[in-house]
Image (cartoon, rainbow, N blue to C red; front, side):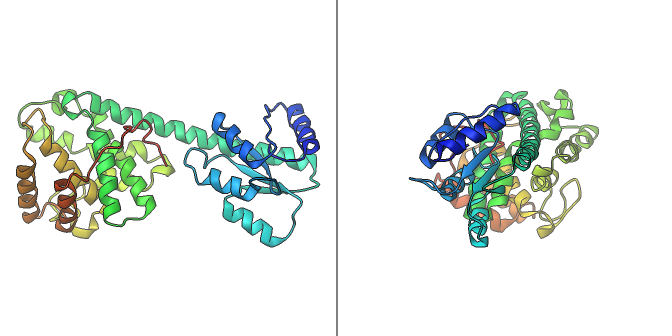
Length: 324
């Protein structure tokens, strides 16, 4: 709870503690931001008119930070003009209470918003499990160590160079980790086979995009990632799998990831091949684009980035690919 009037804080604190809540307080906007950084709460009751930083600015900063964006914020204010509410909505407030407020209304809204926060936390926990499974698939093969980190970072950077909107860039960051999660159901004897796969083994291997899509589909937060998972093995000329999509029928995020995926496969050692020099990799990718395998326009954006060393892993690897 944030309010510069100590009497208001004491009254709210007594009310909410009587309902069984753990309560922390702050008396101005700067102190509020410090308290949130120290220990992020499940809900914030935020006064509007305060010294140093007003409630609008505090709300704006918290909602602009991916670490705190999902904390529900209730603005508690004596202001009643429509313009003030609109300003609060624009800052990202989740709800409003007008002073003087009804204690039953306050506790009811707190309960409701905490339920929403609990569901959000559960979804994030479910996503974390999926990312752990995907990294577990990668860990089965020492030759693919760091593969997910590279695809996640490089696909994001290529998408940014192409001017994709933020939600698609986030999908690429997540898709880089989750694209092969379906391989969790593929036998290790096939995944790590040093020689060519038999026809029957290829039939099994080609199921992994569909398996991965089914695993991730229940989470609505991964809606934009599903096309990447399902279609990252399609080819520009329609000869890919699982759906034989052709040209721009293939989602652009899947086309971006497949270019990066091919580059990473060629530049790293795999059970079936050694790593190749970068210039030879570029030659192969251009030859494959000429065959109609990859979107040449995306490849022509990618190659200068790779040649100039502009594709980089972040200083800190993906400790949390769930980053929104």
